[in-house]
Length: 433
Ligand code: F6P
Image (cartoon, rainbow, N blue to C red; front, top):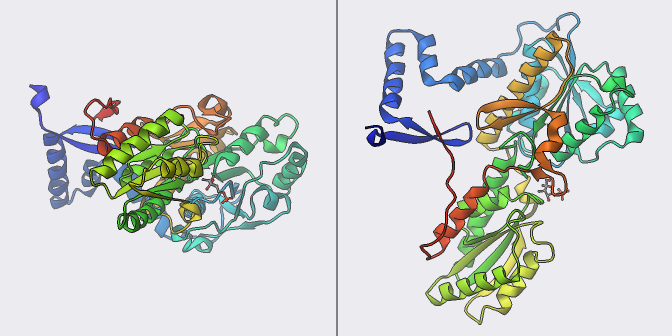
């Protein structure tokens, strides 16, 4: 009977996945069997598809090229950042340089986004130039937010031609995607834009089209939870409600995930509009709970959620309605969320996304194509999508994807923080392997 078959629950391609236990045990035993028989290739295969890919990738990233000379006619591929800072931008740039050189490309760094490109701040990047970049926060190439204005297109086109740039890799946030999307609609007037252009998602907001996760979001989450854990310790010493703002602009990913990880009782998101009645019922729940002995109520608010019902307003309502049962403090978690070294997850995500981008570039060069694409992580793995379809994937007013896979997780907050039995929980999809 299939329903009684033991299974293990794991994660695959950003989805919870179910796998028959005996199959997993047999596959794991097969690795030992192949290793013992010195059948190493089969052992690697038995470990799973991505294991083999990562092994090959590690080789490329850690072995300097055998020849210093570039192949004749090597394509010149330029890398730049556009948008707000995200930890892992450096890791992605380093990965692009090393994997690009491995494919025989000449790799160039554009320092200072589009402004840097227009002023000719472009330098060749050799394998050793990016040593150490993989593990540092910040962005060695610099990152600026401005989207080029139409009046700047001529200068950008000239710069692309003068630098003989054959392809662009843009590692950045929403403005990076918008910039490339807009520029590509002008190829008939600016033929220099007709080169392969690939966007790689890097934003702590995790609000980019075509990718369920963007580089930097995991590091920001770690930073936010680190700060919330400290707030939790300090606040639990008295009877206190603490309202914290997480970054993300209109996208609630960081707020919700850090709320879940830090054990928040309430999370206010732009995706889930709330009104005065909601605040009144939440503060009533809080009063009941403090009356029953609660010492801390942690509340997460997404920085741009609720319009005028912002963090300060929510904190004022709670303070006014606390009836002396608890006090209220509030603050923004602030720029610590953007800083620090990229987390191991972000480093690996960056390396894998770049791998797909470089592979795609090789294909486009070989077939003489020049398609603008975004790469991303989906439920199916790492995929690309045509950047000109961006408009169909996002809500431009709030600059976030129309479908956000993580939204059903909102229910978890209510389940763990409320003493009620009738909370409806939306099921999360589980992949059968
Ligand atoms: O878009 C990335 C982001 O970190 C947002 O989450 C945040 O609101 C904003 O940038 C902060 O911008 P700045 O670093 O310019 O203050």
